[in-house]
Image 1 (cartoon, rainbow, N blue to C red):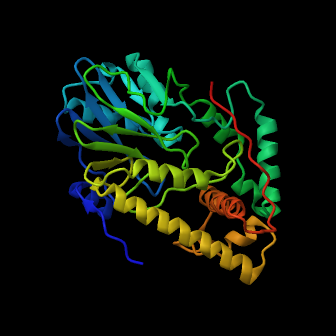
Image 2: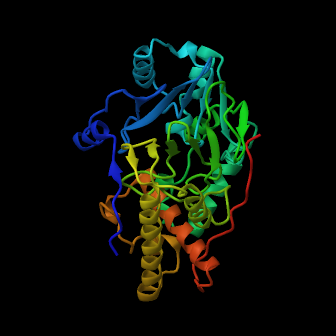
Length: 350
């Protein structure tokens, strides 16, 4: 079925995306600016940070991956508004991933700004947790999913990666669904949109007709919906519900954290729902035709954009965990699936 297309509004951003270069800093009208921050060694290439100026507050949404190069780009963008990093008063990350929250700790140190996350966002491991226990549990889960012994080290979390996650900024504020970001002169309403992460949020600026969608809704790709430990028991079901919540209108401009801006939230939501339904249907066909005994065997029979054999390291981990999320979802819909997936357990970042 062919669904209506979105309307691209970030033309310079789309052109930069196609040319594989960094897009320009853009003034989106009123007191809102888009500032790209490089995301090194990753196909996404950059995070789109958004600066919003209120009466006395300067709020930055999704500051991006932490690096000296990223800080230079961010500072250069702020200078176009006659500001510096020390002028920020608040930092909101739509979710806990490193390409969104990563720069927050550095910016908080430079400015004293508060850092905020959604109230339900989780951390893989707290600073006081037992990393060895976590790493053993991770390998146990991946083994249950059928990851071969000779690929386990490649796919599993390791201590450097875990340390990196532990060093991400703890939030000073938790933002609840329906609340307003505490910034004078701004009207940013929080919408809880779990799925891509357990506590992902979008921010709706109705006075300026803008939706800051993080990774929840992107114009071209479907975000990864992965089964993770710890985490929600059925993240794909959560994602479907969140898409319904955010697809409440179709005329506001959507400002995603990657790629480019567009209009047509309802249209894009319909496309994302269709894409995931088709993916689940493909999983069912694989289960019927190949009768795989593990998540790994299921995943390797699915269609991947660059082919299964091209997937390595973190990309391979995402593919397997995404497949696991479809298995869990299909089981919740009444399908009998003889593929072992242990039940995730929730935790909170407090």
